[in-house]
Image 1 (tube, helix red, strand yellow):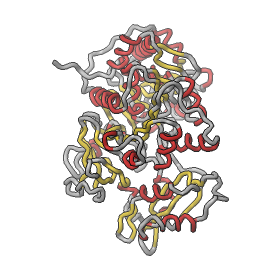
Image 2 (cartoon, rainbow, N blue to C red):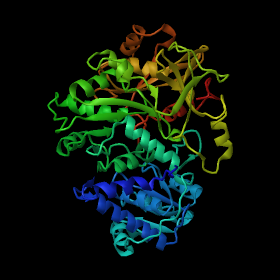
Image 3 (tube, rainbow, N blue to C red):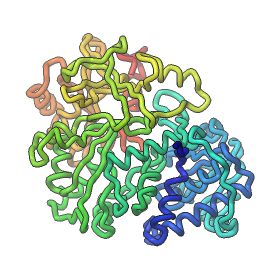
Amino acid sequence: MEKPLLVTDFLDRARRHYGEQDAVVATTGERYSYDELGERADGFAAFLQDRGVEKGDRVAVLDPNTHYHLEAAFGSMQVGAVHTPLNYRLVPDDFEYILTDAGVDVVYADHEYADRIEAVRDDVPTETFVTNDADAVDGDWAAFDDVVESAGTDYDRPAMSEDDDITINYTSGTTGDPKGVVRTHRTETLHAYLVSVHQELRDDDVYLWTLPMFHVNGWGHIYAVTGMGATHVCTRGVDAGEIFDTVVAEDVSYLCGAPTVLNMLCDYYDQRDGDVATTGDCDVRIATAGSAPPEATIRTVEDEFGWRLKHVYGATETGPLITTSDARRLFDADSDARFKVKKRQGLGYLGTDVRVVDEDGDDVPRDDATIGEVVVRGNQVMDRYWNKPEATEEAFTDRIEGYYHTGDLATVDDNGMVAIKDRKKDIIISGGENISSIELEDTLYDHDAVQQVAVIPAPSEQWGETPKAFVVPSNDDPDDPPVSPDELREFCESRLAGYKVVRRFEFVEELPTTATGKVQKYELRESEWDDEDGMVGQG
């Protein structure tokens, strides 16, 4: 028999089996059971219907990782509305574009970010505005707690199909206007199932929210953690000390952290000479994605913190998660050989067809040397881009029909494990030779004086392009770094082929990043190529 795959099933199951158990630890320290979380989601659902919201209408959520985000998301989806989470690092013009493009009917915004919506209020189609602290916000905003209490818990859940749209996640828009990635009940549900398996979720897990909930629905954890009946520990930002304190105080067993978050944790730990409590009563595992963490970082996380690192990979359009390096039969858990495996993006998730193909759409050999583009087909891959049929067609047909084309360039080893070498736009073409910026960054990360680094193609009269490294020094002082450019160049020369050596360096206080910790290389590229007609690799 068939049962429709609906995202509403996740909270329904938690309420049915874990109603009296902790669902959420709020940022204020309050605790909500699954019964209470469900009642608050019901109240928001009833409020939305009172305001005329119907199945298919869009409801946006602009919120750090608080319980309000979960309540607004599930409340919206319970009436069949399309959950549209917003990146809280954006500016008013970005919000105007997204709210207009998606035709958003209702916005819930945290009081710290509501002013960015208020600034464009008269220019968007949205009619209903809700916040968690109306007294702290200018303009006509309803208070979430008030509307939930006054609306009651009675609402009519419409008939829903697993093929109905249920979320729109907007991409970062680094190469133009952001695109709305449309996902259905089916794609969201199956992705959450895969997360539950590969991330080893259990009902006694305590999950710490360091990954933004807006980012592809917190990589699906808003569903998976809820459906398993585990506990959400909410946050209002990322602070290394608070993360360690919370891991111990709440017996956190699982969290996610972009490479920049891992760096923050490692720096905090090192600055205190390791005098930091890193675990409570539970074993801790941490998932990272975005770019491969340096080996030194993995060593610190696993050998010093005592945590188990799981390196995963994907894109907003792919669920996001499609691969994992957590292939423990391929390495000895106590051997240093595991670090080489964990740096790879890894093997495809269950039911996921991940390939690396050449320009003709043929699979590259498993020699870990031949570079191709990562393409993927799976039940967790997006349905389409919102109102962008041409972009959708191109994404699924460029090199090979029926696969989503990620734009990531990779190799494959003899076990079928993928290793990302670069983005198409980040590959450096110097004198006709392809150079992986990731390889250069990995090399520089091995130097003790390098805290963070991003390598991009810079214009060169002789070679067309040449690598340039933007370095955050270990002492955080770009004016007086503990290493010179010449010393870093010599360091590269001892480890890289001559044509790959980085010869240009710029020390900076910080690198531009997204809310999820990914370095925004396009900003660095734009500054380097502003006076040029174009880039060799057109990155």
